[in-house]
Amino acid sequence: MDETIKIMIVDDDEAILETLDEFLGMHGYRCYTSESAEEAIGIVEKEKIQMVISDIMLPGMNGMALCEHLKSEHDADVILITGYSDDYSYEEAIRSGARDFIFKPVRLEELLLRLRRVLRERKLEAERTAMLRKLKKLSITDDLTGLYNFRHFYTQLESEVMRASRYDSPLSLLLMDIDHFKKFNDKYGHLEGDKVLARIATIVQSCLRTSDSAYRYGGEEFTVILPETRWEEARNVGLRIRSKIESEHFTPCEGKQVIVTISIGVTQYAEKEKLSTFIRRSDEAMYTAKQEGRNRISCLLGEPA
Image (cartoon, rainbow, N blue to C red; front, top):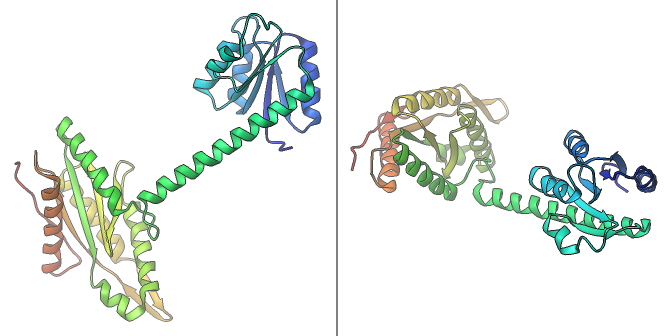
């Protein structure tokens, strides 16, 4: 049995506490005991306990209330036990959040089987949740760079535009393109080109606040959404990114060091303008930076619709 599983046993009968503690301990579980729900809550929180076995009849807070509290406040499952079969039903116990319900006198082997079933279900649910979380992350993340992908960019930008409009707050956008990247790929190969993309993604991310978000827009293009940011501040962010990338040295082959540069377009959202207009203006600003010699920043502002 996995020794990391911690079990909280709650009962105001000391003999039952000792019996269950000894029996479950023999099967490899680490047990904690308490005669009150209030004390048990503190132990559950402190020890990060995953499983609670509790009598319903307790001094102070009863087992049902304890179960409801743990369900809402802690990541712990509960098996309720009671000697009052006429007063409580299985349905009531499940509605309170319990995973299972057992009547006294408790048959130890039955308790063990039910405990293992609940723990098994808990493990399967955790694995399913982790898998769904991973699938969700994969659906919005670019595999190569680890940045958000093109699809998520549009979803997030739409959300940020709505928020900026609602609270009348500034919102800026950077669009970046690696200079002469096709020539780099042609000369050194796509594997080395991928290394450049991944490294630039890391540099871009290192220059941002937690409220900002970076995306691989496509190919060698990246974009950054900057909430609560005017274009002047956004330009400063772009300058940091451009400078850090220019100071990076890549070694695509032995004895050869190469500097890669990037052109950046900066713009700020104009009141009531269409999302497509906002994005297109950042593209126009970036294209202007290319025309003006690359490895530079160009800012282009729009007028409110």
